[in-house]
Image (cartoon, rainbow, N blue to C red; front, side, top):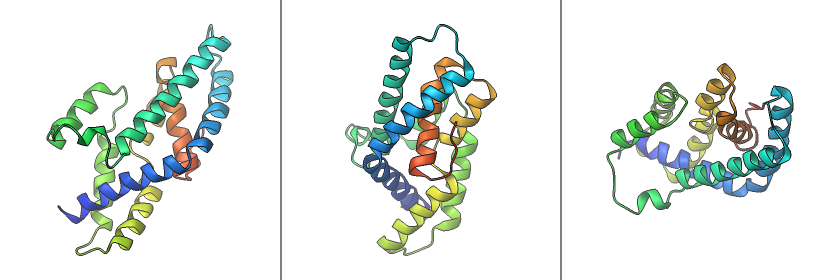
Length: 174
């Protein structure tokens, strides 16, 4: 495994750890951000029942993201789909275009990684990579929503903003 690949694995593992530890804070920020965004956008026909449904969707997306980052999650249970094929399928299914963001993440990992990195060095570099790149694919989600706000994008957007603020400390709030 290349040093950059090893660093990317550590990056996802570190994001997972931070999100597990910060789950309660993430849920609080999701509640605050969701209410603020709904008020700001004045989405039509938004009642308390629909707001609750969008909040539940945000929490479900949080659980999905945790599973995506989980180093021992279900995605590792059923054998390996070639990573390029898996990435292409994901890029086709998502409403946002994250190819550029992923390329930037890989380039950043390559620039930080070096040969024969000690475990502590990898852990430190993973935290540095989170600081530089945020949590993939948040930047794509945030920019895609801001270019064309829509209710179907709202849960992804709110979660991405909360992760960036709470987990990555970049302040990309709504």
